[in-house]
Length: 572
Image 1 (tube, rainbow, N blue to C red):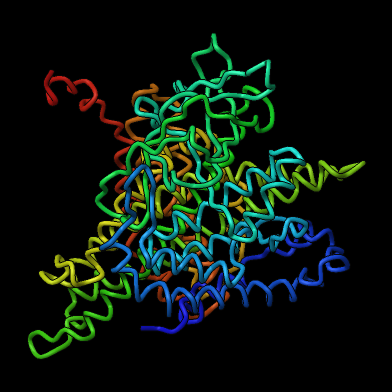
Image 2 (cartoon, one colour):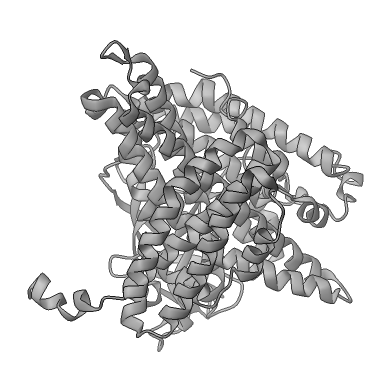
């Protein structure tokens, strides 16, 4: 087994050094003045990169030598529930203890609260590494977004009380949104929050279900604060610190992610604090939280896919049939090559999306604190927000669907033994399945992205990529991508003329086109700048442009017969 899950991954190292975060880091570090007060803060960009490399290296070593060797044990024992209490498996407890010793919690929190002020992009690299080692552990480690939300939207007293504890790894967090009758439709949440005038405290009553790490010490809870409301405008977000009024009713018996407790929770007149303003719980705060969580789930899917691919490659090298390793059989070669290309394409999209999200957040804070903001910064903020809002659902959709495809192929490479519990690929196959369900199903990501795509939200960045010189060697690939981009734009314009039902029916085709075109351009840029990327770009573009053309034909035809004959086909 490798000794370091960061140092053995050249592709992940490539994105550390080739994702342009110069402006982001300079803004987050207040032009590197934090170093005067916090010695661990970077003095310049190269110092920041070196710090990020050291953090990722430490995490990579822990994950390779301490977490991954006990991943099967963590899955086998799983989280346990008895006497109303949830207990992590011994392997999970050991991993969390190792992270705490290495001071890897609260890494995105500001320096003043004991954090490391990391950009979202670097944090998602950490999530990917943890997920490769043990996917269930990610759902505990990866909920650092909870602390980040408190830092962004909480009041000063709340932040001072809780954030240092998050940074020290003393408390964990949970995002408490879903209810038995409110899954994707969070606007129908019925858990009630009532203000107790006599004590000046909010009280929460209701039941929440499918709550990842619902045994956490600190929870952010979406509840209905406006008694006469019945939509998203009546919801607010609340901070709950676990006490006896918070009852874990059970944990779910799941297909995968056994190390992660998924809880059903009952709140019984539970004291709570309002986060931010009333009525903004879903439309602003929870949506911001979910967007961060969607990036984390994308990173989780990439980590699981990376683990499954490596298991498949190792097995294909060792397994001899017909007097040769099966990796040399063209049918197996095709599976392995496509897995590798899809993982690297997804990683390109993921860190491009994270970069724009980072820039948006950094500019928001900078402009809010500026007495006279630069108009150019305001324009750049608008662009970053538009691209972040478009790319986030795209990458959550594509990464999780890709992860499922890769794990399917990885099991197929193993043949019959892959179906057996003794092989890690069986666990990866189970763990990946939920990623395109939770934190917004793939269908919900398509809904979130389609309006942006029909509005040509990616036009400026696609035009920018197309205007670049890729050299004579890559010119044929560029020409193919220019043609595919034009077809994508025609499809968007065609769908805009169609009825809402037709748009919704073909939205997945439009999203597939957009993702594959974006991935192609990103890989082409990386192939130009980094020679080892050229074969990946050739394989990905060669395999996926025919899929683009197929989706284009489907949209151009816009066959409405499935909609007209829905009842005849599906019955009553």
